Image (cartoon, rainbow, N blue to C red; front, side, top):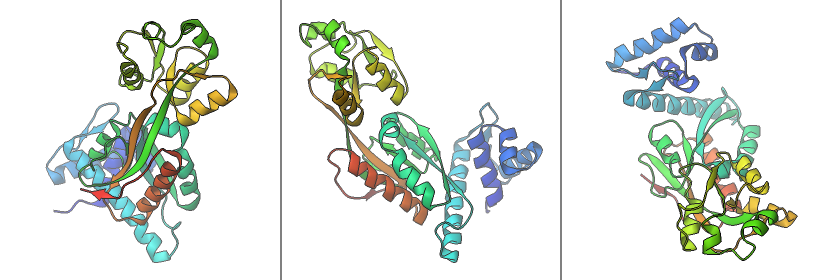
Length: 304
């Protein structure tokens, strides 16, 4: 049994676009033709590949086929580029990547802009907490991810990037209101703080290091990196910001440091263990920029 590439590609497009109608527009065929292709592939493989929800999502078997489709598209691009001798030759390739919000808001877009100038490539970015981006690799949703997971995901390669360092800061007015007598345990127990979302444990870890009951303070939730920093700059609460954002606020006088320990989050680049010049170029650019910006990168390549 062989899996026709056009049928696997159609399934991947349906998953990417979320509906049959949207997939039809991208493929420039009718929704009926899209449906027929998916059904033909399911009949061939003898398994249901797509959950017809809104948005559509792949079954466990569908995940395997979508991953195959992405790998084949990448290899096809590499083959065309190799035959022509031009890295920019061939159809434009969509490369799905997963990244945590703070990397996306500080350094991650820089290498992508350089890559887009040199290669026929578009990026489909999936933003999630660094503790969860590895799951998108495991499911085949993305080809590469910035993650806190150091152990390689099965079928992937892992390269340490370094540590993203966070500093506790607040506006001068917020500091004067809540910490006039010092950044004490009692003051921290009642001063409002800002969490990114309910999975964000950075502020919790910093409080615990200061001997404060982490669940005690009132908290705001601001789930976007730029807006999170803006909320801290507006005095909504105190927060932990990455070095680049904290340094800018401290230099301008818009923020003051609360002291206490910094919090470091180790980050790793993981990608499919697939020998592809294009995917290797993506990895090289991202790893180089990550190691330039982040603290204390080191270590070699590991695989599974």
